[in-house]
Length: 106
Length: 132
Image (cartoon, rainbow over all chains, first blue to last red; front, top):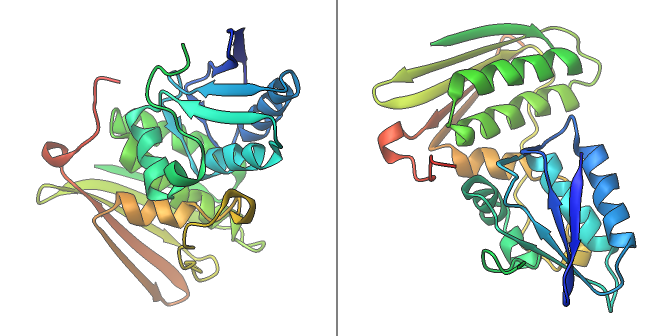
């Protein structure tokens, strides 16, 4: 899966372009996100605005990548679609993963 | 009403999921729960090869999904309590989503078959923003 990246003064913004993160593409997504994290020592913000659908394996990939992050590196998520937001809520991940308010990436 | 039967293989599941997605349109909540059920059947099939039967219908204002398979009995995990990220597993979210998205779950084991029924709110009570 393609992840577009953009450097700002404060962070690296990573935007997954595909609308779905699910079992059949999750390994590619996880590897792509891991490679994005390798580019930046500071803060990375994953902008999920274009992700309309995520399943449990997709969520697991976000958790797995977040667990790789070590200080001083930081990983945040923002712009969750209604379904993605619901998935975070139902699994309590909105309390575990660093979720920023919408459009905090720009 | 949608009635489908497919062999319990990864490629057939992918194709089935796409067909269900097309049929459900914006009901991504139902698609997600159904996808999790079907994925669980495949992941926990322990070598079972057979046919999974799926029915989706609107009954008395609810969307009802019935899934029947002859694989191993379901093993529904207890949802873990929230824990710090370092102690959080990357797996086990599927049933949390199924339970959270459905309004009722009925599971029976009859004559070596699993019979699962999930109910979902009618469209009028759907809370997601459908413009996305």
